[in-house]
Length: 368
Image: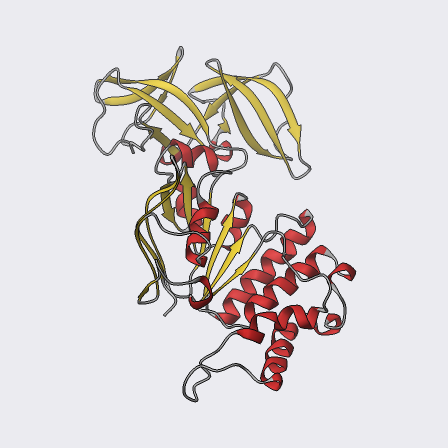
C-alpha cells in the first residue's frame, strides 16, 4: 500500500502558516499533482511527506503507517528535485546506484540487508534501460543535456523501488520542447511502475496533461481536488476559475435581475440570461461574479451582449481577441479560420448557459 494521506496537517514557520489544515487522500498508484502559485504551500506539503519538514499539527500517513515522527530514510519514498541534485564527480551509473549503497532493503529472504554489488548493478541496469540511459552510464553529469540529467535523477529514484515518488517541479529547468517530451515519458513511467506519484508544479499544462487528479492550493489551503477536466469545467471558487486555464476564465461583476420568472445578470447596461443555472433562485438585485471561458464566448448576430475589440493576438492555429465588456477586459478564443475581426469592431456575443458560471463576490464560492 502506498496511499499518502494528510489529515488536518498544518505546517508553521514561526508566525507564518505555510500549510493550513490540509486534508487530502492520495490513492495507491495515483498520479496526484499539487498545483498552485509560488508560496501556496505545495512544496512544503511535499517536503513533509519526504520527511524534510516536520508536521506542526495533524496526522500524515504513508500506507498504514503514521509517519509524523519517522525519519526521512525510513519512509520508503524517493524524491526528485528541481535541480536534479546529481553528484558531479561520479558517473551516471554511480549516481543511479547511490541510494542503494548504504540502505538496507527487505528482499524477501529474512531481515532487511544491504544489497550485493551484483544486485545493485542489476537494478542500475534495469532503471537505465527503462529511461534510455544505457549508453550514458559511463558519462559524468557535466557531459549530459538537461533532459538526460533529469532522466538520471528519475532513474536514481527508481532503483530504490519506493512506495511513492515525490517530484518537486522536475521539468522547470527544461526547454519547452523537452518538457513536452518528458511529460509523456513520466506518464508512461507511472503506468509501467504502477506506483504513487506526488508531483508539485505551478504549470497548469503539466497538471492538466499528466494528473489523474489535481489538488489546487492557495495560501496554504486546499481549494479544490478532482480530475483535471472536472476542475477546469466546474471550478469551486474564483481562485480556481482564474488560475486554471490559459487565458484564464473571464470574470465580470454583475447584478441578478428577476422578471416574470426569468433570471438574467445585468453587466453594465447589458444583460445575459442565466435561467436555470442557480441551484437555488437568486433574489433580484443579488451581486454576483459571472464567469465564462474564452472558448465558450461565441460571436453571434443574436448575441445578448456586445464587446468592443481592443486587440487581436495571433497564435498561428488560433487567435485571442481582447475586448472591453461593460468596462472590463475579456478574452475570446477563436479558430484561425473564423471571420476576421479588427480593433474597434463591436462584437455581439453569446454563451451556452450550461457553460456560464456564477460566483459569490464575498465568499468567492460557486453559486451554480
